[in-house]
Length: 363
Image 1 (spheres, rainbow, N blue to C red):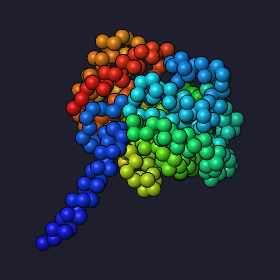
Image 2: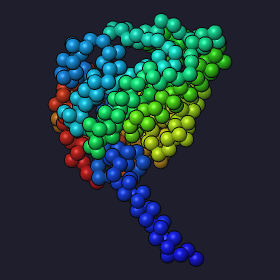
Image 3: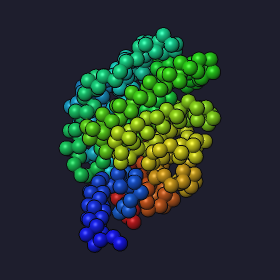
Image 4: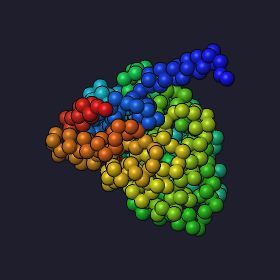
């Protein structure tokens, strides 16, 4: 029989674990489906052009690369919505393309055309451009995360993020934003071997980059498969999912216990497939009913999914939308968010109202 000493030791260990967990930010606990007093809330793109403070700063620093690659500016921009609205999550102001130079890929961001890559990867020869991850090229990311953890303290979770391998490869192959994805989709059929090698290399580099963010202080990681929803489900299964899984499994091995959220815009046709990934939380876009989404992702936590346009509709509409989503999501494993990023032109008082309402819905 178990000795009373062993029982006491086990109780002490589980008590210590429970108390450590109780000190974790609300968002971390919700992602793990622990009991929470309310749904934690944050917004994708919560730092950015809808805020006057950001627009004023952008006048002084017109280059997006400068704003997203200079430690002081990253921290200032990241903290603007935190100071204004007190969300439960503070996401690093950065870009999914930010780690490219660390992998051997240069890019520019044009104010009108978006990301532009001088060199693309479309052949076995082009793959030689890639090199081992050089984290010194993204030192500002680690420096910023360390400062943000100090600034935010226990008041919110600090989030890091990456683009999914498929989404990043759309830029690497196409060389710019696209609405049709003709070149990369054609590669799936005409040059699958090179594309698989490229996706594998990008996935391995991303796993290193995610670990780097966690080591610097990120408490939750979000993976954005922004263009995964452009693939038919059977193609997503082959060309996106295995590489997201490759990143997540590596991170789960090196940094166990850090919650990972998977978000893909336009993913209504992919939810059951997304739910088989070894992530903690599935982000739902606004085109999915929260009740349906909850059912379709099984035992995963969910994030979302208020329609961002509701923020243009006045306080009553915002309150109704927030309460509806929270009711359908239920009291455990829900992180309140929009179903997409905050839209340019969104009234700041509407964003504030969203967060104010969220804090009144307690369990």
